[in-house]
Length: 75
Image (cartoon, rainbow, N blue to C red; front, side, top):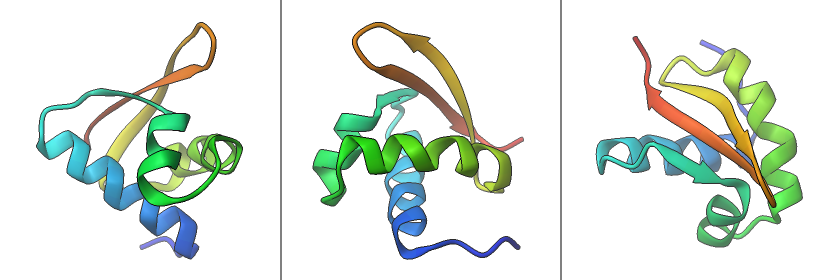
């Protein structure tokens, strides 16, 4: 299992919870507001988490004002 920083653990916990509630698309700002980080902090970590997460699949989905991330259960 990959080692995660404290911030990455908080982001993954939020994403895992979101997926179990049926949410599939999130923005960095939404995550940041919920867990007390900045959107920039979240946005810089999501691509790395997309590579190493074993719990959820994270995919850069679209970009308007800010990047939207598609999150689905692993597998």
